[in-house]
Amino acid sequence: MRIKMRNIHDINEIHQSIKSVRDLKKGFLTNFFPDPAKTGLWMDNGLLFTAQFQETTFFFRKETGFYHLYFCSSSANSLCNALTSLLQQSQDTLYTIDLIGNRADMAELGDGIVSTGFFPYTSLVRMSRMISVSDAPPIAGNLNLAEARPDDAGEVLDLLQQYFDPLAENLPLMAEIESWIKAGQVAVFRETDTIQGFLIYEILGVTSYLRYWFVHPDHREKKIGSILIQEFFRRCSRTKRQLFWVIQSNENAIKRYIHYGFLPENLVDNIYTNTNIQYGGNNN
Image (cartoon, rainbow, N blue to C red; front, side):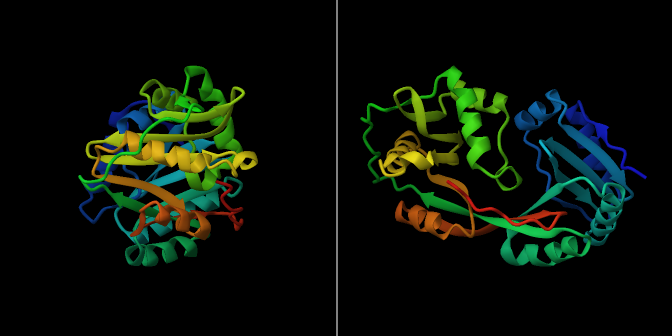
């Protein structure tokens, strides 16, 4: 028997599916915290699906070659039973599951997920930097640093797809990149009209989020990374806290971020896949 997934086209369908689990009044466990704008893009592009397994509702976000798997369940036991049934009905489909939370809190649930046929893939750790009112923002001035143009969206997406891991790093849609460029939240470093590095960020309230910070491997001796991160600090100098996620095993990157004043938090994102494949390493 094959799983029957239903395409979702309305945010109210998501809310109703979540409510159906809450209404059981047996508990509530989830890794799905839908952002209206981003979820809207998934639905507009026909990428979001759902399926029900007794006391668990699954949401599936379609990617090239796999699905990101989200859940709402009444308990860990119900979730594990549903995952077992799901894998039995879709043995040839690749899924990833993200569990975000404090390290200790995630251990038991992670063990349960592994018992159903999933495997640990990699982990990310969140790092943060607090801003003091006495901190002077960096001064802009590099001639090769500029706002991304609307026609840069395709090149930025190509670089993300080539150098980032889609199983671990949640690559954006073209529409998201276009939206960030329109909002002035993408800076690029270019020479001879070629993008050699870029940063993508968002500001929400008093918190700034560094979404992507990239330097092309062929140009990593030019201090482009330093120029870009200083630009991020300059643009976000009015925020109080700066956040981003980094692959936990990327020790060199973590040391570099600590050099810039970031510190690891106790919040981790443990990623599991239902195929025993090895994380290939972060090229960024």
